[in-house]
Length: 209
Image (cartoon, rainbow, N blue to C red; front, side, top):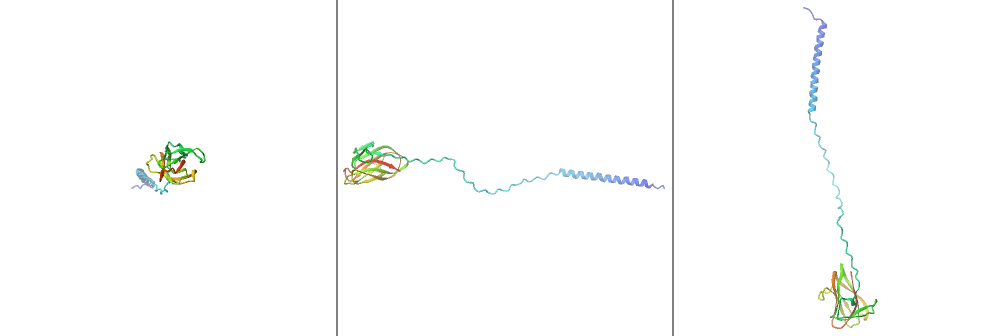
């Protein structure tokens, strides 16, 4: 029996080995492609949104200034002198020339049945709290001058006691405290004494705050 040539044997063995290596290489390529395909098909991991850390509480903010306009404070009325002889009504009294400073006239011969009336006097929004009254008396009796509002029968909002000042033209300024008065009113000066004798003269009255 013929023996195969060693060259032939080696050639066939080499060919078989190469074919086996080629098969293994092909199988490796298939496995590599499979792995790559699986990796591509795997969904990417969903990114978890970052959660902001809670902000620390800030200090309480100062309240915003109010935009509501403030109402300005009312302006006090500057009261002038109410000259007695210029009253809207002179009941039971008579004007006379005065020797008081400033000259002019005063009203005299006043007794407890008399009164003076001043119409529509404006006190304003800021209350009047006192009244200055310029008086003189040469009488031997004392009495009072009273301030009433709107009617002769209303309760006095202030009064001043008057006694002898040293003569009918010896003038003195007395101050009567008032229940606070605002608005517009008719002002009455009424007079009170123990008898009907004349007991005082009045030159003027001036309200104040």
